[in-house]
Length: 184
Image 1 (cartoon, rainbow, N blue to C red):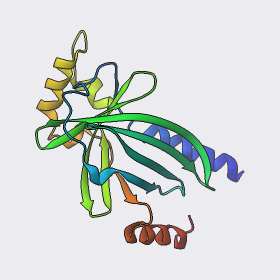
Image 2: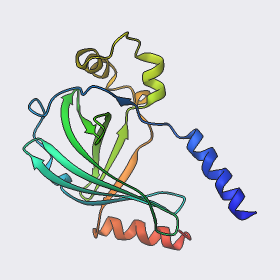
Image 3: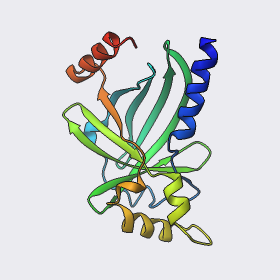
């Protein structure tokens, strides 16, 4: 019975969660990208309320390109997925917007910001927002970039913030201890 309850709650959570917009085109090329933020190069962890976590291993691939290895763990430390991406940013308004390129050639888009020396957040552009507001016949780099530039300061365009902590940092240890004490 408990398994059915947890499965149902998980399914409801997935339906209620915003999903990121996935595009066929990038908003800029590798060559047009801004220089990488070297402070991001490291191992990062984000904990979720269900007891799982996401781990990122970010390394420099080129002057303006990151290699990102992403692992997602469920409750009980069970590996649920493993992906790798290339990420490169474009300066749009006050933000660096990342093109996150998957192996299948599709793109996710996100902004990030620092919340502390060893903490940053990432917010993906929301698929529902794009579906409702981005009305074009054919998506091109030019019209996608123009739309994102026009809406970059609208919080409604983004999903929830995902907080990451530098692995082994005091902030990471604090959050990990809190999660343990909370039963996760």
